[in-house]
Image (cartoon, rainbow, N blue to C red; front, side, top):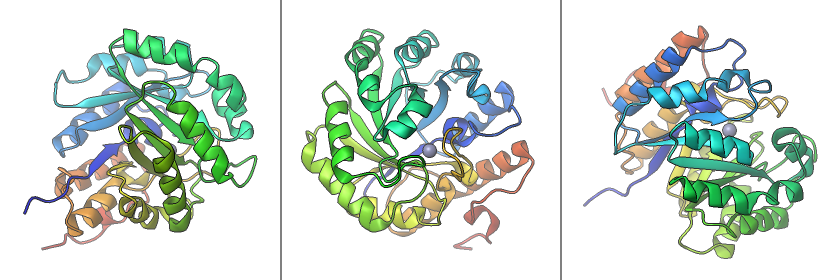
Length: 300
Ligand code: ZN
């Protein structure tokens, strides 16, 4: 029997690196992307087009996109937070744009430069620009489980923001636990509510951080709610410049190990994913939180 497919989106080149204080060279970013593709990933966050003064690690987005391998079977995601970022991403050759909204004004003002309502004013323009530029568009609802400034995120706010995202032509909507506060119960509740509110044509994606060691449990909960697209960051690196204390993303190689053992087909070679995770550690020159890459190989 064919195994059920599970898409893992590798975010280390963007979410993983964005908070690293030492600038990683464009060459090392492209080398990482090569290893990500070699491991079998076919969708990854390659960079973001945000204010380089605020996120200096992502200032070379144009150069990274210019250096990407030309292959039709891979999707390289560009993250943007405003119309200018979308235009820059398109000019750099991006064909998939992930646009981020927040559920809370506290985070939205710091991360997106305006309140939630203010950021939605440009949404029709963003969608038009992406479409005219030939890029598919996804939306991420960040702080969907809690905000470092405003506290608990009400479920109704998440559903409302998701509905507003779906007013434009998006193929996918992600719920992001930006600061790693979600429990599996929250994940079930929120994905269930958003699924019920959105057209079924919009696929759902989950983005977890492991700040409080709940990310793997949350990933399983998302899968049990029918989510078939999960973000991960090799070696478990990552954080957010605007979310104090935000720790790394769920380590992708740990997701690969667990979900392959649960019978899913991720399309990813675990050994090569582990190799790529170790490469991340070498580039950053430090030990990283992922566990499978430090464990003995299994099965032997
Ligand atoms: Zn993240």
